[in-house]
Image (spheres, rainbow, N blue to C red):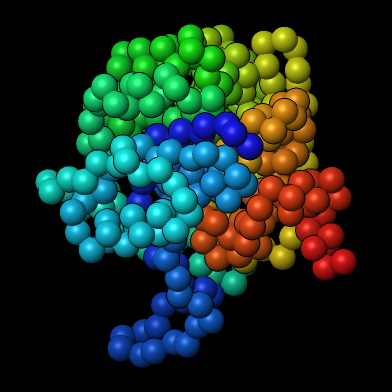
Length: 318
């Protein structure tokens, strides 16, 4: 597409097993259908999805100098992602998550934090962001060397250079509300899940939550509401709920939110209006739900657009 997409933040590996409806007792063995690993996290997963859709994609994150980090870099290299700004650290391991996915697609997880937490700012990162067309800030509140004034300054420079900026988060902590407020004025679209949005805004409806974030300065808000779709609002008065795609055989919901954020950026980059970009994002997330891992069965732009226009995954069977 010719658009430069930069995803910055949470970078890790997911190790997945399916289906796991109960753990074997003692030393017993249970046979399952699939075990796989994939690049994941609120920055790495969107980078993979954006690259598969044809965007010129750069990932900014951090991994440990360990076997898991080497594995993660290999997975990302296969997707054609620019990894020149991924930092390798010897003071923390690569972050990783184990996910025993049950037969209903639910995803309990065991997470080990890692190197992305200590991603360090430098001039090259600032220049890369300033040269981007689209930026996804994936991990508000968990980038300890960036959260606050550093992030706000970098994103202001990028927006002044013409970038469209989206942001997402995971696992809100005590620092997250301040981190969101710091960058909200530099966000075109804030994209939390419904649980994250209601928690951070301290309200009981998605409409009220979107208003809170826009009062903090965000120009728009897309709240991901799981099976209820997504609620999109902006400061011009747009208020709409975009439904999920129909006929999805759900295998695994891990990574659906990350893929939605990537799909939304791809939609905007392709010239869609925000609501249509949300529909494209829903078609992207449907393909992730239909497969195991945060990349699911996503293939390319044309396939996702076909699903979006049909509003159903059944179109792939024609």
